Image 1 (cartoon, one colour):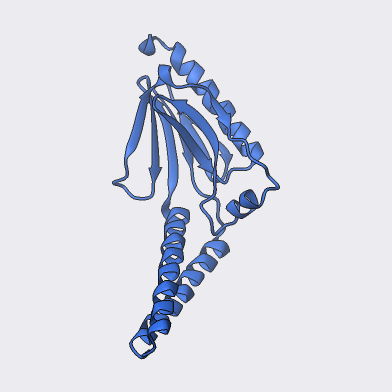
Image 2 (cartoon, rainbow, N blue to C red; image 1 turned 180 degrees about the vertical axis):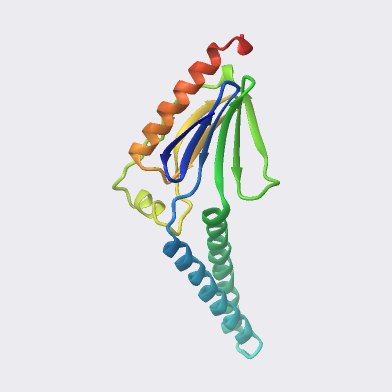
Length: 190
């Protein structure tokens, strides 16, 4: 079995039967802790505002608090999802027995997608404007970010590799294309 590390968060394992790519979110310990502290503080603020709802008599103020709590809950849920992704999430892509499998693992019960390898198109980098406001924000540690690699599969366009830089994206593409070509030429897939 061969093990290749593209960077500390991306590894490739391959042997005669299986090729496997695992991508973990890139976040430092201090960033993850800061994100957790932000969630705690945001939760306390929301709970405090909820507690104030009972003491308010003015109907307009009650409506304001309800609207405020709707936005609060949206951002609370978004940050909790990002924290869970950054803490426990990973993307798995593997080729085995002529099939391509993809799994975005945040929990054990999440769905695994699969396609016949011969029907999968070429992998390529997702084009983006690195100086665009949306791209700059999506690369922040408090965001899940945008995928950087795309692959044409039957019925869908599979995008993966969240928040990868250009160099890492090109390395992932190179390794996947080599594995795809090698697996399509093996006798088990003919």
